[in-house]
Length: 142
Image (tube, rainbow, N blue to C red; front, side, top):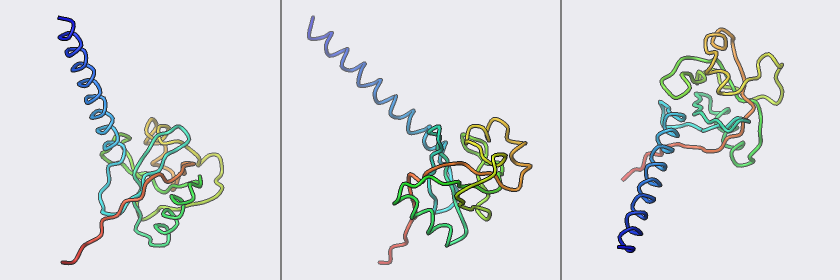
């Protein structure tokens, strides 16, 4: 009887851990939705993450360097609507990296999400963030 209770408790605990891991992973996927084969994940001062894609090779190289250095800078661009957890992304053709930004253009990811129309009306806004991941798919020739 005692052994049966231990087995049931173990199954419940393992099931809970698997469920927690799956929910965490689904949340991550929702935060980091992207459209291209080349993107980075940035994390703001509140720990929120979002995928950033760029069409500019120079900006891509800088984002890659920021990932290696773990340096926090202002990363941003034009805010456009997007189907992810936040309801927006930065327009890939407008991404820029700067060391300082006027206060009225500084924001966190969740602040953009909670007042999307306001931030979409501005040319560019910036998140003080670090690059935590770099992703790119490389074609392999056989």
